[in-house]
Image (cartoon, rainbow, N blue to C red; front, side):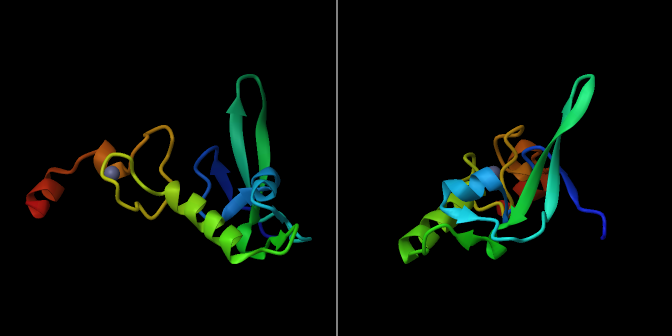
Length: 115
Ligand SMILES: [Zn+2]
């Protein structure tokens, strides 16, 4: 089996969720293999590892309704909206920054372009 991608804690790509996150929106892994792992470093101990599953392969615990799909999409979208510029960053906003990277690290060229 190929090596699983490993992501840093809180930097998991969109479309992946832990079993607990799936459960929160009424989904379950549904027999799929673990798609990726998250590692959270811990001082003097083995890193805390979380298994990630693909949301698109997850199966509903109960039948999904359009409303529940919409809620899931909205939750994913909300995590990508930068609170600073209100734009969809296209990736989940890292909580360490609290904003998209252009807002966190303004590029002088960008401000010229946007004027
Ligand atoms: Zn921003």
